[in-house]
Image (cartoon, rainbow, N blue to C red; front, side, top):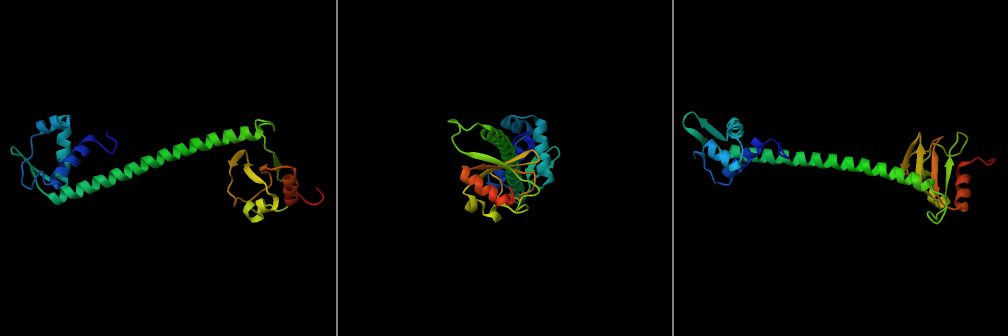
Length: 205
């Protein structure tokens, strides 16, 4: 198999391009299978399959004991367009799969590194203040999102991640509803912590 399809399909495409370009006219007799096999460096069977494909599409006509003749330039144009469209779709699909795989790999690496970062003791290695806050059933504003709460404006703190059911969501969606059991990882000093507690904890806490 080639990148965009079977080898015989690629050879059929190359021959169809020659017809479209006028290198072969309708009615012209094509070179023998052995010569084409040598040109494309494939077996005669591969050339036979390519010719059968073009014959089925009405591009060429195979005459017994006579040879292969160009039948229709229009049919050749249609095959060329079809092949290119399939090739583009195949490339798009392959590229998308590669991006998804790369995205999954990056997400996995980010999760591990952010966990390590947040578990690092406050030191010269990680000189920023941060704290964690576990939300409880009795807390205020459950069901609301960081965006709805205007978290940054109210606290001047940055939520680096949210842990929910063992899953760490780094750079969390600001529209994610906050629920009991979630752990907020917040970048900020003691002043930010006080404002954050005020945002969620009842007065008696």
